[in-house]
Amino acid sequence: MNHLSDRINKLSTSQTLAMAALARELKAQGKDIISLSLGEPDFNTPDFIKEAAKKAIDENYSTYSPVDGYVELKEAICRKFKRDNNLDYTPANIVVSTGAKQSLYNVAQVMLNEGDEVILPAPYWVSYYEIIKMSGGIPVEVPTSVESDFKITPEQLEKAITPKTKMIWYSSPCNPSGSVYSREELTALAKVLEKYPNIFVVADEIYEHINFSGTFCSVASIPGMFDRTVTVNGVAKAFAMTGWRIGYIGAPEFIAKACTKMQGQVTSGANSIAQRATITAVDADPSVLNDMVAAFKGRRDLVVGLIKDIPGLKLNVPEGAFYVFPDVSSYFGKTLRGTEIKNADDFSMYLLAEANVATVTGDAFGNPNCIRFSYATSEELLTEALRRIKEALA
Image (tube, rainbow, N blue to C red; front, side, top):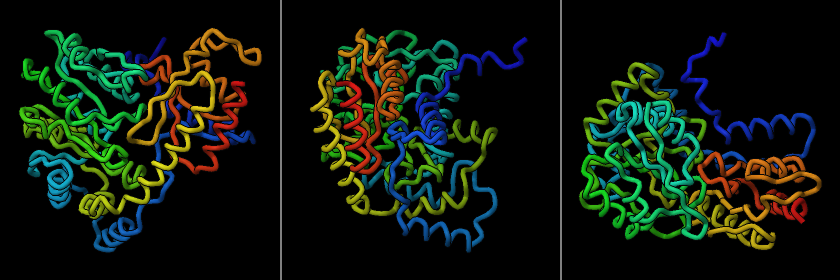
C-alpha cells in the first residue's frame, strides 16, 4: 500500500538538484567531477551586505518578521523597481518570500484553479512546470529552438491561447537559454495579450542584472501590462546570495494580499537577518555588480568559443544569465564508445560517465534536443570541462 499522497507521487524531482547530488556523490567516491549543473554564482556575497547582516544581529532583529516583509525592505524594493524598471509599486504591492521559488509557488497557489492553462515558452526553468501542475494548473508548452534564439513569436503565443488560458510564465534573461527579450519583442507579445484582458503574466526577472545585452525591459513597464503582471525578483543571483533565501514580487494589490494570506499559513515571514541585509543590497547602485557581470561575460565568450570547436553542437549566443544551452540532437542515434545516445538524457549521462562533467538534460526544461551547462565557475575549470567534452565526443 502506498502511504504517500498522489500529489507527491506525481511530482517530479528537480533534475538540476538531482544531477548536482549525483555529481557530489561521485566526487565523494574520489572521481574528478567538474559540476556545471547548478545555477549558483561562484562569487561571495559582497562585504557591504555581510556588514548589514552583522549589524542586524547586533541590533537584535531576532523576532518574527511581518509575513509580507519588513516595511523598510518593501520600500527599498519599491525604490529599486522605480530606479531599474520604471515601475511604480507601493509597499502594498510587494511580498517578500523565502526565495523567488516560494514567490512563484505562492502566485500559482493563489491564482490557479483545477484545469486552468498556463502558457510556458519552452525552454523554461524546471520548477515552473511542477509548481503549476501541483497547483492544479495545466502547463501548455510552446516550443522554441536555437534558430529562434529560444524566444516565442506573437503568432505562437496567439495560437497557444484557449478559453482556459489563465497565465503565461517566462524568464528574461532566461534560465536555461540565456536569451533576453527586447522591449520590441515584449511589446509585440503584449499586443496579442491586449485582446485577452483576463490573462496574467508572471515575469521572472531574477537574472535581470546578469545581462550583457546592454538593455533590460520589464514587461510590466509596457503600456497596458502593469495591472496584469506579477514581477518576480530576488537577490540570489545578482548579489551571490543564494543561501540567504530572499525573493519578492511586485503585483496588483489583490494578488499581493492573497500571497500574504497564503504565506501566513505556510512559512510566515522570511528570515529577519537576511531581510535586513537585503535592504542594503537592493538600495545599492547596480554598478557595484559590474565586475561580476564582466567576469560572467568573459566566461560566456570563452565557453561559446570553445563550443564552436566541438563538431555537432549548435548554439545561440546567450545575452544574459550564466548558462549555455546547446542543441546536441546531431548525436542522437549515434553510438559513442559503446553507449547508444537516444536523447538528451543519454547524452548528459554519457558526459558524466566519459568526461566526468555534470550537465543537465534539456528535457528538464521542456526542450529535449538540448543540454544546459552553467558557466558559473572558473575559466580554468570551464576550459578543462570543454576539453574533456570535446575528447569524449571525438
